[in-house]
Length: 496
Image (cartoon, rainbow, N blue to C red; front, side, top):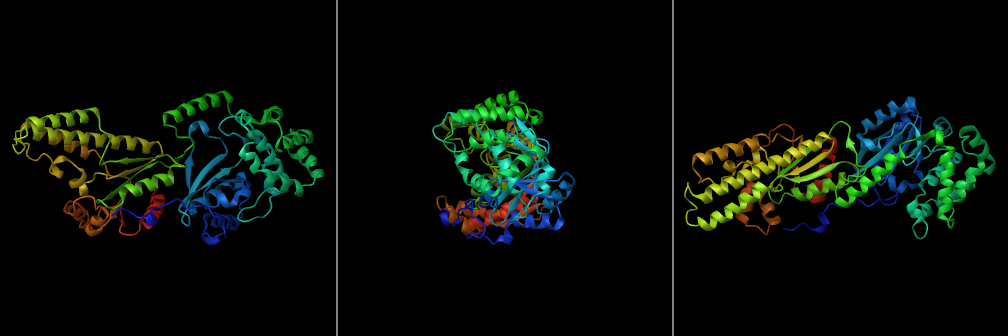
């Protein structure tokens, strides 16, 4: 029976706290704010606090600036709340910045906390600038919910400098003003109304003497709608010259990396800035009968993790066929035509070709397994459905266990079966294993396009098993798919 749209898992739509979503106390960011306040950690949310409706539900980063001496305490709080450290690609790593991800069970989405010990503006992966004003920003931070925020004068200073560095040649070539520039106008107007102009000059002179009031005014002026884009680029160049002593990164390397990233996007192999888990990746296996929802759950888990982390999905039951497998399939077709009347003979060419194709499929599964294992060693998460283990060998295992080409009897057949068994013996158990349990009658209703007897036999095989193996997590797949996916997300994140 096809799954109805009412049971399909979907990415929760962002909602502002108090706007019809879960209660405030259930939000992960709210619990994080309360825990940090209880520990007395000196920190603040140095940017992005005007977009609370987005980052509170996992849409965007949560940028926290923390005092160096309190960094360990903040990290301990993150660990207690289930956050996990993730590492960016080596080319995008910036000293003094860490990324942590936590699962917000209320929304089923990952919350990205970008932890800063240094205030860095500009593009962190290319040319960026350290703003040595962290003590002043933390000392003058004002209380807010759920996190403290910088004082208005520092908010205005950081917003103007950061926005000035966002101007690019691409923006200059566009028609109209870029969307990000229009988006920050309300915040700029509010801060200008709150910050007396008389306080700006002393603040700049005391904490950031590289920028005088005249340059600050020029930076603020090019952020107004209607200003020529080329003027903005000139002001950005002037700001870069003033902050040269605070610069980091390598622009030439960044330019070459940009070309490489563009080529990867054209080739469909781009990974962007997706991060890898610092403590290593994991191979997650979904096991179940036909109709258990393995493919749908695997896609849902991939869609959930892919925006932030390195993740791949593989179907072990249907691995990519190698040239050898394609040749064996062609040989089998020819054998069926030539040997059509001798299919039951143990010495027939057709029986041996069927066995050969099964062995080639086992070789392809082993090759796919090796690729997934190598991927997890880089910190990625591999999600594999129809994973071959001894318990489901009759469904996805060696040819002898599946009864394929059982009539082939010869010395060659014996060697082929031995080789086939060797491939499957080398496929070790996954790191995390879920069994999606569904009874035969439910499986028949969901797989109405297949013969009922065939589906019932395969479903009963797994339904009647007692899963006593350590590390196996049984999940009731008879429930609506939304509930199944929610449980899988929570259990996967807990096990990673």
